[in-house]
Length: 264
Image 1 (tube, one colour):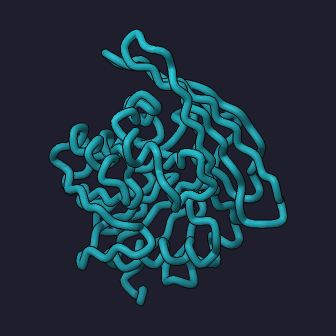
Image 2 (spheres, rainbow, N blue to C red; image 1 turned 90 degrees about the horizontal axis):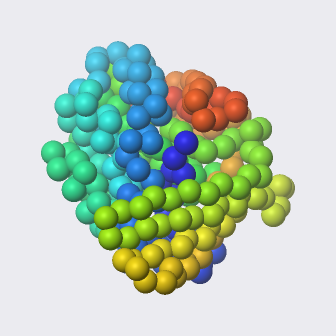
Image 3 (tube, rainbow, N blue to C red; image 1 turned 90 degrees about the vertical axis):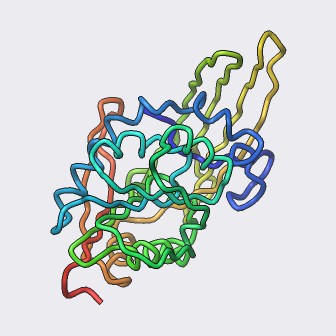
């Protein structure tokens, strides 16, 4: 399974600090996580959203779209895709991959585009919301961009009930450079709403010596109950779904918010 669209923070301990991969290292993103590795997940997200939307799914807003790997598959089925991300570097990667999609610089907590979509999709970038208030702000953003009869889907890496420490590794070779990574996911304080993902990258250009970039992500961890309650509080009708992936030993939780005709 792909290592997901993480926002690495070089030698930092906060996801809102200097973002190495979102800045100078953004062009390396396709060597960390390939678009083709997202095909199975993207099909599930599309099928789930399409089944939930009462008026069809011809337009979709993706918040925290990163390098556009999900969009590279979703655009096969959805005519109008708008991709929002905080990083101009990652949007540049996505523009090369998805030239027909609209790309907008913006923060998923506060962006307001002044229009509504059949669906809103937030992949694992939602993990960078580490407090209930931050999570609620993203759900609010999704609500105001979802038309009545539409729905929003959120796909955190974990909920509190499913979190397990883990390690992973991977990376790919390009024409002139190569990347390898080591990922270590752990929770130093199970009593709070955060966990840690430490990552190390080995980057090599041409025949040169590899250099190492280390980063640390603080990510949010909330219970299923918190997710469902917050979705209801902001005005969605909440649903919980499970995604079963061929590379995962157990299904993972995704959350859907329906905005019905009677929603405020």
